[in-house]
Image (cartoon, rainbow, N blue to C red):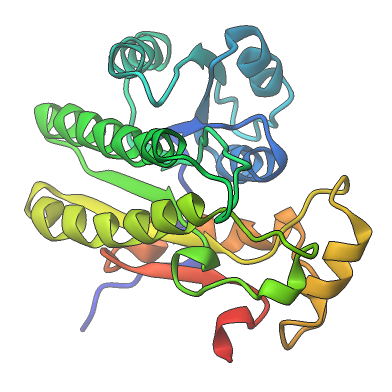
Length: 264
C-alpha cells in the first residue's frame, strides 16, 4: 500500500526559511505573503535594507515564524555573498530561494545599446549565483532545497507590436533574459537533482500594476482568451506548489500563469 500524504499538509512549509529577492514590489509582495502564510520564515532581500525590513515586518506569522530584511544587489557578486550570509546569520538557514529581483531596463528593440543589453543579462548571472549558493548551503547541511526562478511569458513568445504605443515595443533584452532564465532552470535542475535540490520556473503573463497606462492594458487584454489582466494573488498557488512538498516530483519545469496568452 502506498504511503498516505495529506494534500493540505504537503503545502505546509512551516519550519523552512525562504529567501526572496525583490520582495518589496508588485509581484514580490504577493510572493512574500505566500511564503509567510504557508508557515515559512521569510527573508526579503533588497538593495535597500530598511525597505526590505519594512516589508518583512508587514508579513503574517501564523505559526510564530520570524521574518527578516537583508541588503542584496543581485547583479553584484560580492553583494550576493554578503547578503546570503546575512540571511543565514539572521534566520539560521535557507531552504528555499525565489529569484524574483530585477534590475529593469526600459530601452526597447529600437533604442537599446549593446552595453544596456549586456548589462541586463547580469540579472541571470545573479539568479544563477544565488541558486548555486543555495545549493552549496543545503548540500553542506545534508538538507533539501528548492529554487524558483521567476520567468515570463515573454521568455516564450514574442510581444504583439500593435499592443504597444506606435513605434514602441517590449524590451528585447527582457525577452532574451527571461528566455535564458527558463532554459537555465532546466540545466540547473538536471545537475542538482542528485543533490536533493529542485529547480523550477514560474512564468507570469500580464500582471500590470495599477499605475500601468490604461490604453496599453486595454490592448493587452484583447490578446488573451480570458480578456483581462492577472492580479498578484493569482500567482500564489503556483508558487506554493513549486516550493512545497506538494511539488516534490517537479523539477526543471516552467509553470506559466498567463490567462491563456501562450495558448494561441
